[in-house]
Structures are given as structure tokens and as C-alpha cells.
Image 1 (cartoon, one colour):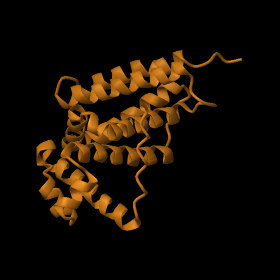
Image 2: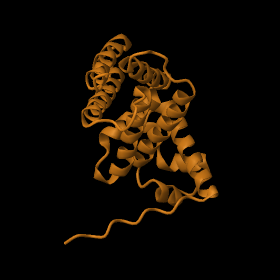
Image 3: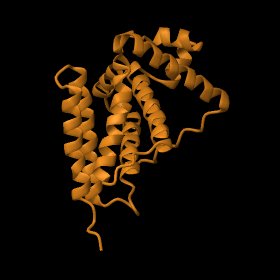
Image 4: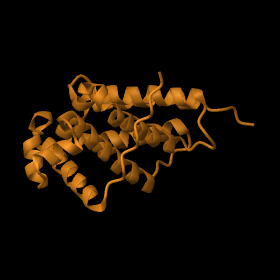
Length: 203
């Protein structure tokens, strides 16, 4: 028997959005200083000047909070990249440059990057909407760099998913000390060539 779709959450008021921004800022600050373990919900509540119960209404767990923090970081990266887009001629080179710029932004805050990636790894089904948003943002960042004329093909979307998985895997291996920045760059540039392979033939 079909069930009715879950109604969409009402948009946040200006005051609620400001409170949410304070929470995400406090989460990012704590993670930057001490990684995943440093993000304690009570301390986040105190630093963002909200009641602990209020914090849990916004984010049911630390994993929800840190995945939302990654979403926020990606949104900021996306805005920066739109203001200064890559200039390379080939789509694959533009995507590789974009992802390496995003990677270097995370590299400047390794503790924060580690906390967010660990949260994504620990996320269960209850965090699916937040994880899906992170994936959509990553996809949008990649597609912006491709500069498609029209909607992407199924092959291009498949290539984007493989590129996204490789970028995430590169983050994990770098954070765990199993890959150098140079190796990450090689892997990213290699996988981004899929974009050129899936491009429609020129008339």
C-alpha cells in the first residue's frame, strides 16, 4: 500500500536561520581545533548560545551536524568557484582544477576535513537526506566546471558519479596518510578524463 510523501519542512525564519548559522560555525570551529572527537553537542550548544534541546531539534546527532557542516563548507566553496571559475579549455582540465582547489581548501583545515569525512562514513539511513545534499552539491560543482550546453547525458552523469567517488576516496586516503597530495592530483586528473570521453561528438 502506497504511503503519502512526507511533507516538506517549512522554510526557516530569519531568526532560525541565524541560529542554524551559529550552530554550524561552532561545529566547524570545534572540528578545526580537535577533529571529530572535539565536536561535543553540549559544547556546540554553549558556543552557539542555544539550548541543548534546541540544538537536537536542528541536528539529532553529531553525525547529522557534521554532515550539515560539510554541506555548508561545500556551498561556500561553490560560491567561491563561481566567482573565479577555472579557465582551462578542456572540460576534464576544468573539473580537475576545480576539485583540486576544493581539495586544497580542505587541506588547509585537516582536522575539520577529517571530522566531516568521518561523519559521512558513519552516516546511516537517518542521515540520508543530508548525505544526498552533499552529493548533489558535489555534482553541481563538477557540472559547473564542465559547462554543458543543455542537460547532462546518462553517460555524463555516470562519469560525474565516478569522479565524485574518486574525489571522496582521495580525501580518505590523504587524511589517513596513505596518499600524498601529488598522488591525489594524479588520480583526480586521471578520473576527470572520463568527462571528455562522454562528451557528445562535435558536429
